[in-house]
Length: 162
Image 1 (cartoon, helix red, strand yellow):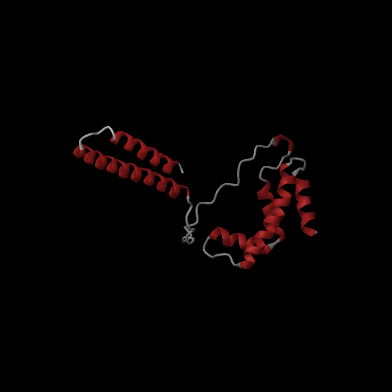
Image 2 (cartoon, rainbow, N blue to C red):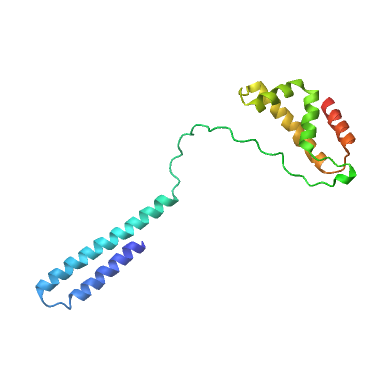
């Protein structure tokens, strides 16, 4: 819309200016220059408009690429707890250790995962999901700081029985 209005305005102004040129040869040159100027400005406008349109357009989603190599294992995180009152330092580690004692199949899956030699099958992934479910329930209770090590161990054992 703005492009059309601008072009019509420029054409109207060009016609008015051409009326002041008396010599027909100069008027011929004037219209050639005006036409070339019009083409150049239009080209610049369309280039910028097309670039903006393409830049904002996300395009077609391509196929997923090959998966890369497995990265280094990260840390379990840093927890700042007051250790003077028998607080638990590594909640996730405590829960995982207790679950490995209670679930021998989890110990085997964890060894497979740590070796990084074998890939985990559907059964292994199911066990990991089950353990992560236990951890997601028990970890907030552990991090709350309301339980001592013995109480938390008993809570883990009791929750596993149910």
